Length: 116
Figure 1 (cartoon, helix red, strand yellow):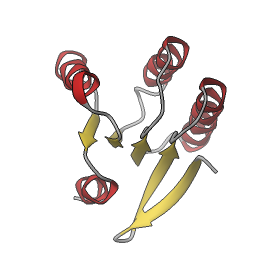
Figure 2 (cartoon, rainbow, N blue to C red):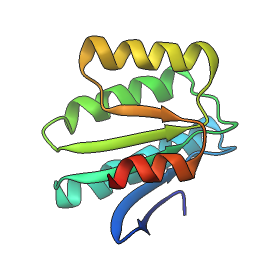
Figure 3 (cartoon, rainbow, N blue to C red):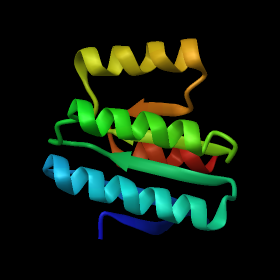
Figure 4 (tube, one colour):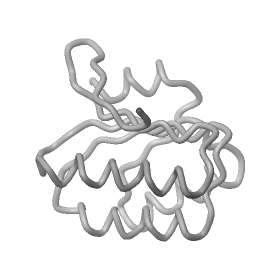
């Protein structure tokens, strides 16, 4: 299941796994994430893995809208699998628009950040 709850050091994390998914699969995973978030509408930790996944324009637009729709829900989020220019763009987006998604090189480091 690409969206599930995992635990690290006793803290619940929503884990979103886009690894190797097609655009349609990624959109389905994102919709499952939306459902999970909107069901509880509570503060949460989120770990996203997009290793070897290609974020199409359609997917990116969906994720942006999801961010707008859930902005009222406090989130601490980490992402792995983002490199190069995309990482720079994400950091710029975070600075300019106040995004909460922090890039990491591996899941273990990302989990440690989330539970601090």
